[in-house]
Length: 88
Image (tube, rainbow, N blue to C red; front, side, top):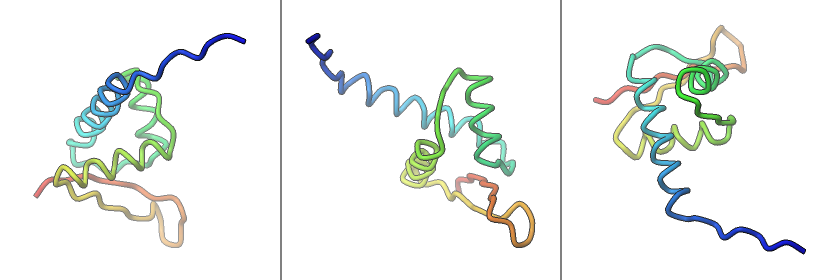
């Protein structure tokens, strides 16, 4: 059996902080974003790979930083939402 590499806790914290900072920068434009479009933009422009669960966690991180993260359906009755972050 091969030995598992040790988990680098400091590197993981740095990665998560960098990811929330990048989400903060992208969403600072005040535009409404679907999660899919935001994930695509993060990957294409910043090389950040993120799934829906990780993106929701970054929304939570933004709220902890004092942002308001709003959510609205893309059309009436839709279960797909757009998100916008703003800092009061």
